[in-house]
Image 1 (cartoon, rainbow, N blue to C red):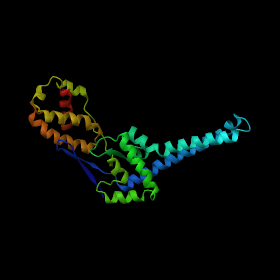
Image 2 (cartoon, helix red, strand yellow):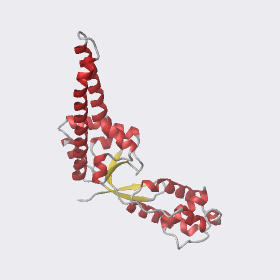
Image 3 (cartoon, rainbow, N blue to C red):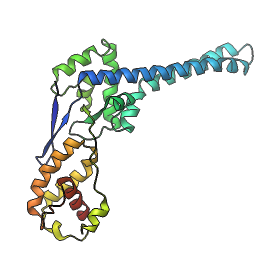
Image 4 (cartoon, one colour):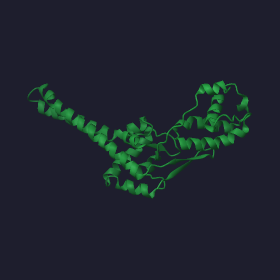
Length: 250
């Protein structure tokens, strides 16, 4: 059954995300685990080929201890970064995606619809270790089933949710707004401080929203802003209008 998470902004405007289900989340984890083990296999093969070279580069009496120590230290460090840092690095640098999540079409966002940051990615994946130890994600499945937002323990700890990706809306080029007089338009003089802040917040957040969430949020904000403009700009849809106004406010 599809579940949605409604996100309310500080301006009493709400939009919703479609939450990722258990099936898609576990498929993503399976793919990421497969990728991790493939990388690990490559590291082991590379290490095995380096042993003869390392053994020949030191004296006969010391070679066994030195080679073993170097190889063990390298493998421990590589295993740590691969199995612990994999999810943290990808989710932080890849806008909430890992390779598995990207293939399945889901991503991690913070509560409120904000992009995941390093702190939240680190917290949710530290807790992942506990979840794996306690029954290899069995506790995660129970937590997600009981949660209205499909949250596992790591999501509760980090304040995150996993949502489905949606096709982005194609933005109208800035040149279009300039041709229609956005930069010297007097319309923004009629907007109050609250409406100006609302438009600027939307413009800063719109690229992080999926198509459905963007259309819904733009419609609600434009419903507040349009009546206060000197012109209605009927030739612009809600999203284009808000970008138009945001450009005029800069």
